[in-house]
Image 1 (cartoon, helix red, strand yellow):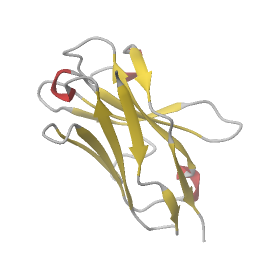
Image 2 (tube, one colour):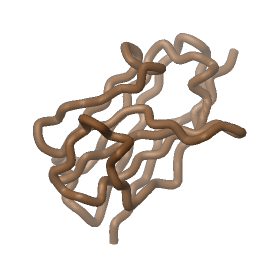
Image 3 (cartoon, helix red, strand yellow):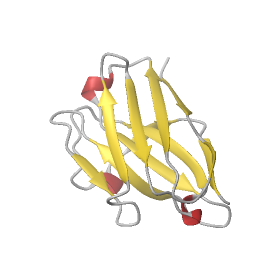
Image 4 (cartoon, helix red, strand yellow):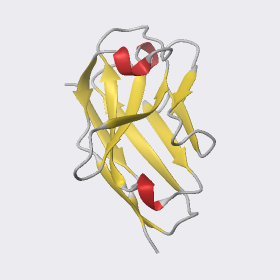
Length: 127
């Protein structure tokens, strides 16, 4: 049974850091690209980052570039999203998602088909 569970969210002050985790089960993480998305109330879901299944290439949205690092630990079947220098506009529910097709790259991550999503973890950046 495919499952993705996000964790690591919480309340942090502007300029602070959080590391989000996406724990995957029911499939081999090595074979799939994983995307991170976020959605704030009243806003559309937006892509944040993506890490490929093959060479580990990464993609970052302009809004988080330079402040976010995505990584994966295949042995733990977990993808991480390290977020630094957090801003109030980063406040959202963050989701991770699995690509449907194995071997996907993150060259055009928002054009990929994602078939499983986690429940999300809340990130609140406020003083």
